[in-house]
Image (tube, rainbow, N blue to C red; front, side, top):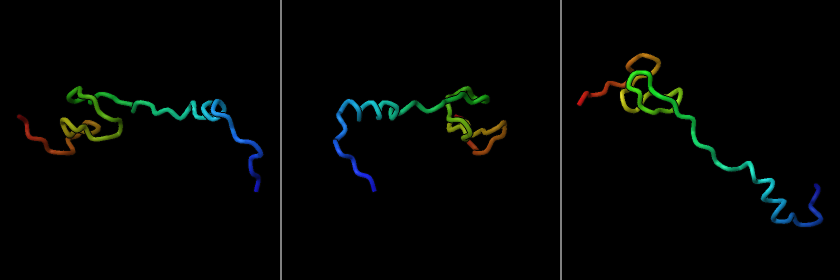
Length: 60
C-alpha cells in the first residue's frame, strides 16, 4: 500500500477542501398556505402534501 513521501502543505490541503463548504437547504413554498417548507415533505404549518391534508391541524 502506498504511503506519502512528503507531507502536504497547508495550501494544498485547503485547496482540496475548498468544495467541502455546507450549502443552504433547498426551500420551497407550500401551495396551500404559502409558508416555507422543505421539498417532498409535509408542510409543518398546515399539514398538506401534494394537495391533500395528511396531518390534521387545529385552526386557531
